[in-house]
Amino acid sequence: MTDTTDSAPALDAEDAKLVTLARSTRARNGVPEGAAVRDETGRTYVAGTVALASLKLSAVRTAVAMAVASGARSLEAAVVVSSAESVAEEDRAAVRDLGGPDTPVLLAGPDGTLRTAVSAG
Image 1 (cartoon, rainbow, N blue to C red):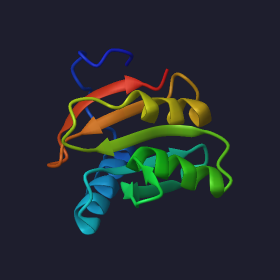
Image 2 (cartoon, rainbow, N blue to C red; image 1 turned 60 degrees about the vertical axis):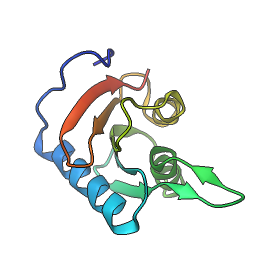
Image 3 (spheres, rainbow, N blue to C red; image 1 turned 30 degrees about the vertical axis):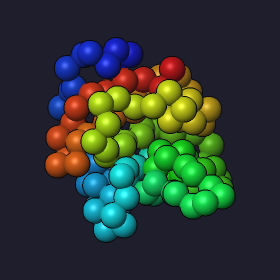
Image 4 (cartoon, one colour; image 1 turned 90 degrees about the vertical axis):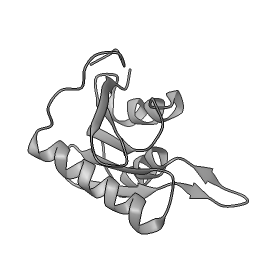
């Protein structure tokens, strides 16, 4: 899962849950992106884009920050739901910082269809 040109794999139940959570947050809050991450214990953290005058964070970076603030030591997976064509390098870097370079980062469209899966590294 290191190349964004690879076809996206089928989702397992836990990753499908992350897509559902990220998609729901995006729709409920009316933000450009929704994200969800799963930590090493299976806990999930869900966030939307933060766009304040003094603070701008992507949904992925916000979800990673929530995980860190809650005591997560690692990540198993990250999902972003967006109309973007790819996962931003800054988002992959945040996932990599907590989960390591092999942590999968999945990108789904607003309809929940998986577009691509890449590694954080």
